[in-house]
Image (tube, rainbow, N blue to C red; front, side, top):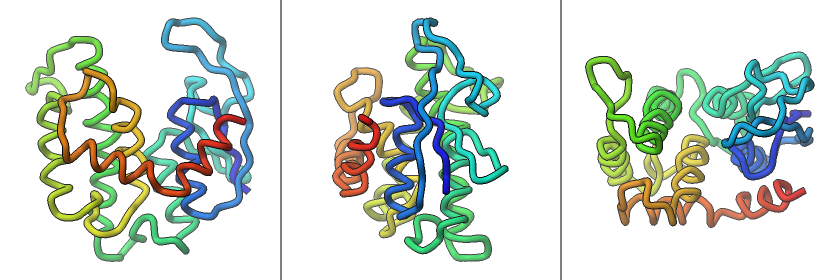
Length: 198
């Protein structure tokens, strides 16, 4: 049984979506976190080292951060094929997109949000507009990041783009907009939304 340390309408919500896609058994443990305005408190029962979400427990194994959790869960629950396993074709592409999410997309979004110029000499990421260009090129190969098959990488990216759909923060792209709609139209997303709401 996977325990998800969760706060509604946060990054941990997409892990509920992933677990629903995987048909994996899980329980939700609600925790408090600091909020964007600095209010709120860190829950001492949350195993994330900074008191954030998501984090999961699988027996004595603790995993935190979305990309790491996605990889852990798709390796542990391979039945629904939401990520190529070690040694399978497409594994490198899958690992790359998971890492790109954490190491490039999220920092690019935060840089844009905070109006911080990305200096390529020092930053390990690029401006958000270049990230969008790279994703549009990847999605030209198929409806999802790995081509024809939906994966846990799409859970991370698709829910992020859906969350920002009405925002002026992200550059507008019909390809990205359609991709996000395709991802959140999945039945597992609707089931996760019901669990997210409590």
